[in-house]
Image (cartoon, rainbow, N blue to C red; front, side, top):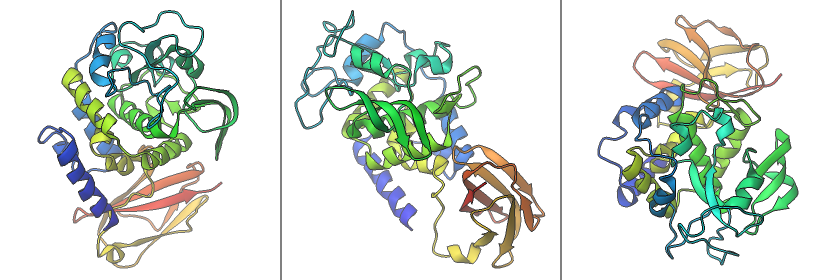
Length: 353
């Protein structure tokens, strides 16, 4: 019921404040996990590709503050007064030696991560932002993360330093201010979906493997997504980019999509959920997982996905009573049980080695 209420509220929110074309997400309705990610990929792919030089002029439609200045998320102080602001065109970089010198084009998903492959990633406005050149250079191609030991800090509070996110620490990350963490999380959900299965030759690092975001950083991004919900700035930017590129960021339009793909706590909740429960034990599991039903169910198959929506184990019908999960590494997974009547039961599984 909680998911149903949340989805209804988000649907009403989109009607009131966004400009989603009628039927735009029809082919994604009723899907979850990797199937939803693939459906969204097909919807938002093949966008109109703009030129690299045209980004400067497009920023005037996508990233303009109410006062007409550049909306630089690396220097902006929401509700406060930033140390400096930029004017379009006249303050483009240029050379810089400190904050406030000029603004340039920040590829929030760094170019080196897609092996500098260029088009269409290089000019995809959903991940390219106008930002202070000096802060952009400090961020470099480091992952976004949460900083423990700060080695450098920007005037608006952005931090460079060593990651201290639980289970994902000990390397250099850049932490944006809280007010823009959700924006960047949804940017990463977009990139991971827009270029899903089109990431041949893309890099692997602490945060990503190709277009797939790794488990722990995904856990962090989902937290950012929840803690910093969609703002009017994002809605306006989404609509502006749609007018330029002809595609949208689904995770701004319908934030629940991110949970339906990657959140292990997401499940289809209904009033008769207990009537369809299946007992998987032990949970957490190590090498083996036992299956016991609370009633007689016609199970077609069982799939086990990791947190990024990748299928890790497929168990066809007839389903056996004991599963070998020794090949699964430690982490959180989602078990999807497909019933013949079309119902899908979603349950969380934890593997501990």
